Amino acid sequence: MRYEIFRKLLFKLGSEKSYDLSMKILEFGNKNPWIFQIIGNNYRVKDEILHQKILGLDFHNPIGLGAGLDRNGVALEALQTVGFGAVEIGTVTPKPQDKNVEQRMDLLEKNRSVQRYVGFESRGMEVVKRNLSKFNVTI
Image 1 (cartoon, rainbow, N blue to C red):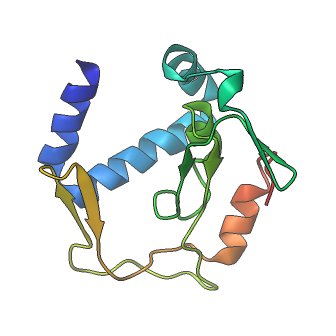
Image 2 (cartoon, rainbow, N blue to C red):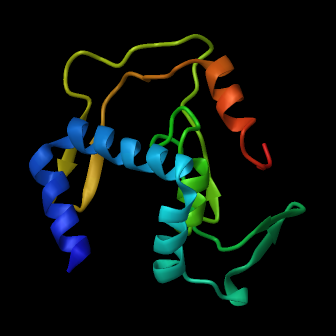
């Protein structure tokens, strides 16, 4: 029920505003980890059968989030707290780069997907490096 309400809200806002709102919520969660701890405790699946050890790295589960959502490494802890076993940060550019002026994403409700167009918004690799240094992560 809550998922459906939140989903409808995001689709009504449009792709860019939905993304911006989602990232603000996730960044807020990194600064206030107790919020995502509650969410994670209620919704995250913890089962030893999901545990994976690959190339010497431990993953709590095999579900990973690919690059594109957290482009600047600002939501890593929140994303892991809600249940992702791995999070890929990026695309990271050498220098800060603005997003395209025109719309870059479409929410395709029929396909339950997001379609993304060219252009990589990034705060640059030095900012991302600083952001990631705040977390106990394997890079």
